Figure (cartoon, rainbow, N blue to C red):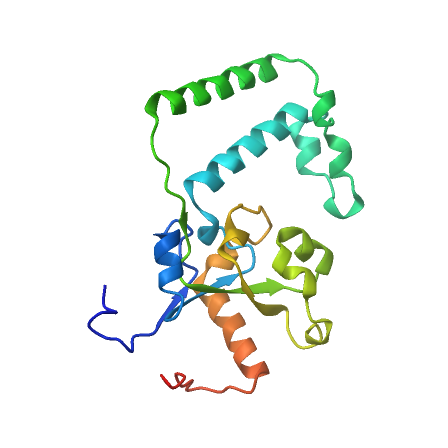
Length: 211
């Protein structure tokens, strides 16, 4: 809204919601707007499509589970135990829950067909800098394609590495032990300051020249 009146405008967005602007607007503001997102922060991943996908994945996992909820919650991720808690999709057994889930899915499909609403995907704005946790490279690689080339030389200095990423990398919600803390302003500020210090910048930080 202000760009026309102030051609030299620069904007920085920290942890912006994922359902902010249309793809056309997100692309059109790339030259002057940069978004910074910390690791698995849930807010930049929030959209109608991502929440529906999360719901469907959770319900699908409940339908495939072999054990009680208590056993599932206490499973240790690093031992590969989680994979043993679920039936394969093709081996899912018939149950009252699965029958109800099938009915629910049919209901949703019919509802979408009746409404015939035009769904406009929304995205984080501008270019995106993703601060990727690099303490566990294997886990990082599972989160998005942009994390597969983490500079191992940074590991001794930093807990996070900064990467330019595509907005499609935030189309899915990732459940982690810190996906809420990654949205807290002090945590985002701390990691940005660490990166600035690593690259030789010091307070007060100065804006790049418009040229």
